[in-house]
Image 1 (cartoon, rainbow, N blue to C red):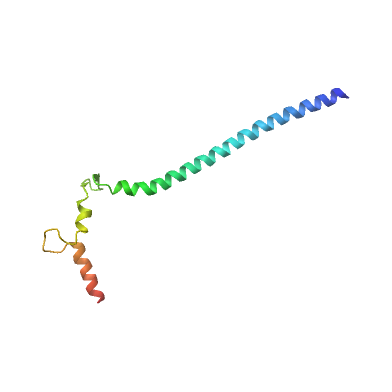
Image 2: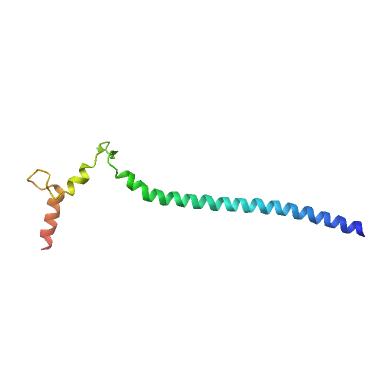
Length: 102
């Protein structure tokens, strides 16, 4: 009778040990997946923030291969004081749209 109880206890302990190892591995993978998902989301947010900043930096090449040195962005915001008496395309189109609505 005591030997039967000992054998049953030993069998249950081995089963418990296998289930504990299986559960430990399962939880490790679940935790790893969660960490990877969080890391991926952080990379997406950082990319969303920093890629436009990097793309607008002076010295970065445009799609047409020309180097953007910041002059194009500055020329539109100088109020038309580019040294030319004729309005730029942007100014001409904005003036015509203003005249249409008056």
